[in-house]
Length: 312
Image 1 (spheres, helix red, strand yellow):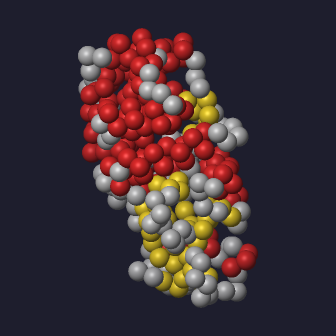
Image 2 (cartoon, rainbow, N blue to C red):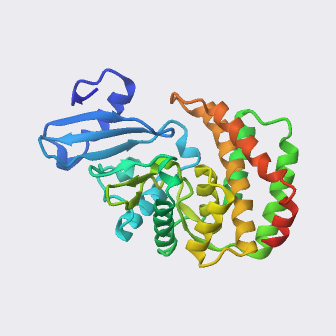
């Protein structure tokens, strides 16, 4: 429901009104807003200023997100993506408060998993990844290993749920980490959060990437692996996209991306159990986390797992 400034009836609306009231260029203007669905970390809003057809996207950080999101790094990555032409314009209005304001992308729609069944569109997304990875290093390096260790510690600290076979999963994580560190990490600026809705397309089939709050310097094969896992690509599609990115799909690269897929699922599974304890958003984090653990096992229990670890 669209509301005008001063009409808030919920805590989330009051938080939004308190924020946009502090935006200096908007003071004295008529402000309207509407909730934007889809986020599982934050409260997202669309804001109108007077009768200007151009509108703004406002992200209010969710409770507990400071445990795993550095808002200054997210802002840095968002600005860099905008400069590279793969993200929307970002404003400094409330950056000091960790509140991100950007252009609301009027001419695009959020992608779905079905969209990425189109190999041409998926190749376009790969081109965006290559552009992002070619940019200047970000102000934070946080590898998948850092993320896993951080979230496992948070789960323990909060008394969160862990699966009965956690020690087995953790053992395989340690093996994968040792193999990847022995081969050397290929650190580049990474997106790290490739939900389908974080890609926006238009009628021309171009792609824009939004929501950089998990961005960091990380291994480029993690960025590809977590996206492949998120999109449920089959192995031939994965090889085709690896070849599009690298110019080849040799066994070592395929193995490296595949191992990172399993690590991505372990990351987001543990993250879900942290969110289950901290978030007030209406989302079934337990179901999501259990499902991610199950999918990680599908890779870790694959008879090719030992071979992949040797190949990386």
